[in-house]
Image (cartoon, rainbow, N blue to C red):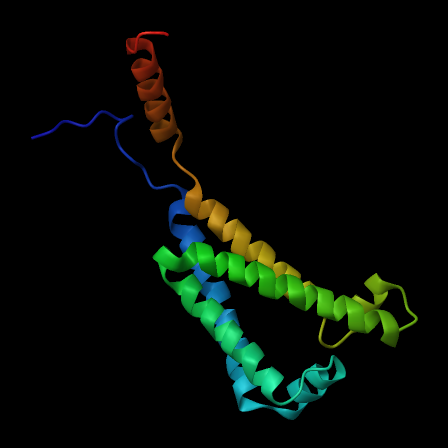
Length: 162
């Protein structure tokens, strides 16, 4: 029977449970968005057509969103999913900025606050939430960090110097 000292235990932190949950919620947003594009409601098609995306392009966007969601849902592929989501959402922000620059004379912030589709705010918030969830997932407990640091110093001090 092994006796654990208080510093040996890996106590769960806020991030150990919340990080993956945030990422899963974001993946579900991707699933919902892709399902909307597969169903083809009129408002979505009209909005995407205003940015130059029609017919097969809409299906391609839906497949990319669904693939990103699947990658985010599995922990082993979450890193690739995060990179794919970053590229996709970065492209969404760029597309919104490019099209809205020519369709309005209002200042950008005022336009975004009153626009029905919110443009760049939604992909920006989703991307920030994904990165925050990834950061929470990667955090370690302070006791574990101290234990690793101490082991590294002990290993370095026992090796002969060159």
